[in-house]
Length: 113
Length: 113
Image (cartoon, rainbow over the protein chains, first blue to last red):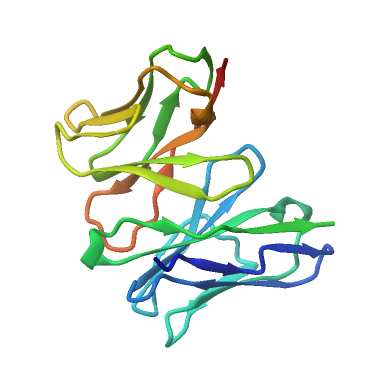
């Protein structure tokens, strides 16, 4: 079965650079979530989209923005990167037709140097 | 603010033993999730618990939910080394929609031969 696809899997950026992470949800899933997981930490909810509209906002810094496109893929844009942004970034998708259970992608490991 | 507390945070046990991980949450929720995470990997969904008294079992793992006590347990029976991982519980705030999940800090489980 198709899973959530994230790209790239690994990304190295310098401080103050920008980064764009992409997420392709499971087909026919209408909701996308972004999470940030620092080393040894639990995942922290950043933002979610339902039917291409922003739905819920968590602890997303102002330097980050995200959107969901007409084909339901989503992108997380991160600017003015800081060392503390180094983390695993997960995308998850869900559908009310499947009980809204969230399925996670493999993650993007971002390292800021 | 929803708080999710797991205990213990670290657990080292021998193969063949039984143990229970506890997850308390601070406000009403309509669903509770258990995830497994291997180091540097994605979050694998283990159980989704939707109602009071729900009990689900998969292999050596059994999860239960008491919504009145706001408590979920993950019980491990006759542990084997392959179950070594970090286990997270996560809670979805009542009302559903595209709310992000709030995770516990995770239980780092090491099962020794």
